[in-house]
Image (cartoon, rainbow, N blue to C red; front, side):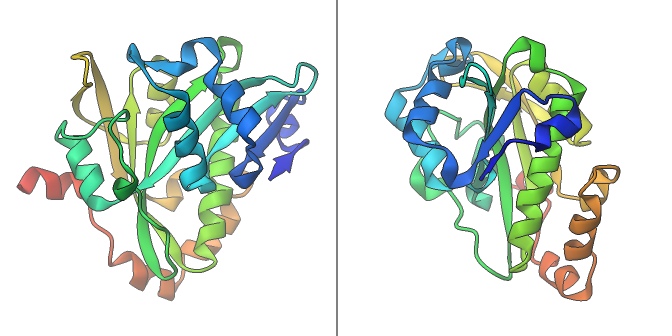
Length: 235
């Protein structure tokens, strides 16, 4: 999807939003070359691995492009991960630079899935509450679209290394779970929680999310879901 207008409603008329399969190879490479972006916790990520993450399951990936320069000013790379992968991440047995194809969860009809905020990078001038609200609105659109086939979000995990990621996690009302050690010994923090559509109340598209989640059939499907942090602590 390419949206020239939505960001204007959040005070950023100069931004075009590119998402899902509209993220081209060229745009993914531009994101990779955004200076601080190709390093996370001082760990280099090779270009092909980086692109593969964009292309694997791009349902929840968003790039923000400046209309005049046609260069990205930020992006969010969000991946569906299996229950096992989420719990291994919680236990420092998996990290963003060691995720494998088998860790990704195929989103199927009438089932639940988990979302992991793998990487997010935004230039300093756009690390604002308005950008956070825009990201949440895009996320709500994507989650609501999957819910049309009763594919429902179960759990959200965010790997926090920088302040903007922390703001995103806290504004989603996710709890601080545990410190997370990267493969180079540096440390960040994991925030997570069971997905609750009511936490997005106040967004312009909230009513759509409420419609697809607040019904008897969705309630039955969500019974398949689990609090993965509670499960992890039991083992």
